[in-house]
Image (cartoon, rainbow, N blue to C red):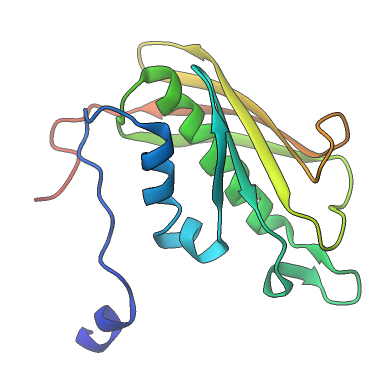
Amino acid sequence: MEDMKSKFPPRFNIPPGVGMDPVQGSKAITRHGHSGFLGMEYVGHGEDWFELALPWREDLVGVEETGVLASGPIISLLDNCTSMSVWARRGEFQPQVTLDLRIDYVRAATPGKTIIARAECYQLRRSMAFVRGIAHDGELTDPVAHAAGIFMLVEASGWMKA
């Protein structure tokens, strides 16, 4: 068990209720865990939207002969981007859980191109946040995939282990 711990960086934790600096927050989050492994990068944000990029890498290709990125990394990109759009809208980090995330693929990603996800939190309720987004490889009007989802907002107290 100890040998496994030495192979991975320490877990990254953001205490609940901390103000959300989208640039610094996304840089910290995309350097750790699954996002860090995939190589996600901050692109931009607004009051209720967020953009992340997933640079093309050969080891993320689904079918070697095509050069097209696998669907899993694109799903992860959209999940992270929609989640960060909720934090941008709330203006602070609060724990949340992906309750529902539907991804509809429109076409295959272009081999060799970076995928950009743009997501917005269009509705915020007491216990839920509603999001939508797209993933594209260079042209916003020619999406690779659409996303629609709901995040359950979790009470911060007692959420994080000491």
